[in-house]
Image 1 (cartoon, rainbow, N blue to C red):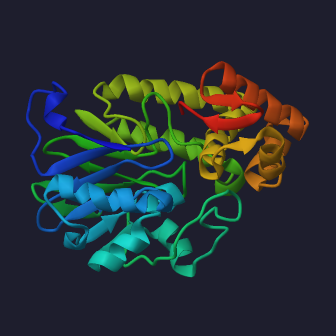
Image 2: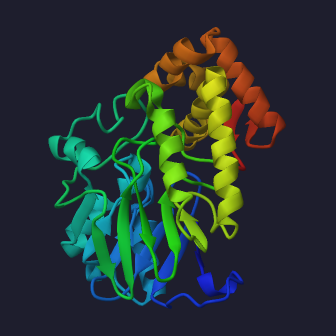
Length: 316
């Protein structure tokens, strides 16, 4: 499921160039941003289970997958890089990523890619172009500045163009929220790194935020303020950070596995380090109690449905 959103229908005044396509994807996939020109570029390629849908999107942009020249990843997580291998095979496109996250890709370090800690799959690929803070990516008519924004991952980046003032925020900024912060993996200072990253972005004149999950954000300053308030709450109350992470990961786990019996799902997630390690460090209750608490809350909020003791996601 995807939707291409015309940025010039958002009521922002100055028109955006017509060669940029914002592709809103389903909850399990990152969004895509496609820029048609010289070079032809895609920013983030979604999850591998959706690679055929990702390939089909190019026809709506007047392109074919093999027209692609470059893939830019905001970070190395599998819901952003899952289409890299197939698209590179089709097109020969070069893959660009920040040096910190690229390091673990090119070593194919499953720990550094969070594959041993989660329930993700990721076809193997390698990074060709190493990005660092301050680099300029010229995708006419845009000149995107690479801004290193650690927090969600150590090598997380955002892209900013000073002429049209869009911020391609990855998971550094979502709509009033941000990508889950995995202090267990990224280090104790990761939440503080994220706060510093967002404070740095708050100094930019931003007209529009294009996040990696969810729709375009047309009130950038309010969104940034909301993110900073939320981060400060999580810093003061670590148990809330644990819930913030586990709830987001849990929905991914259910989406990946599909409909499952409740007990089988518990048996599955309780063996995954993302669940039991985060619980042990931050929430500190019985694993089964935490599982039931999350499932019952999601059912009450209409996120999950229980049909004859079989759980599935209906509204992530």
